Length: 145
Image 1 (spheres, helix red, strand yellow):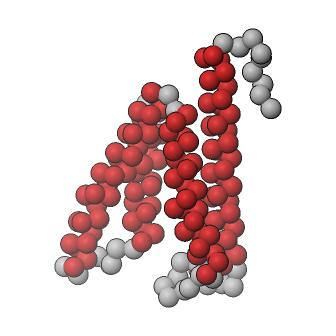
Image 2 (cartoon, one colour; image 1 turned 180 degrees about the vertical axis):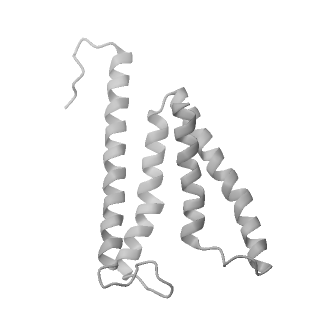
């Protein structure tokens, strides 16, 4: 249902559509995150961590996570990009640059130190968080500075 009055200008209609799409993106991202969180929680119910070394996931769950990450997440990101104004795009770009810089510099250093026997082997979860946490921190810093 469109809440835009019938006498709205083209710009007002575009803005109403942009806001509506942003709300949809946020809702779908929350649902994706909640679904994955609930799934990981259910896998950990037996006392063993879902991310424990050597722990296998059910095939259906693994496919659902992969589909969410490879199909749904890019669609959400593309929609979020299309609905962002120039200032929001600047915030997003800065966050991506910070996260990318940390990953680009941090992983090779960690790998070299691991090969030298100084640190444990790089972990998949830590690498993802090592990109995502600085990305969010960079975005928040740029947006609220």
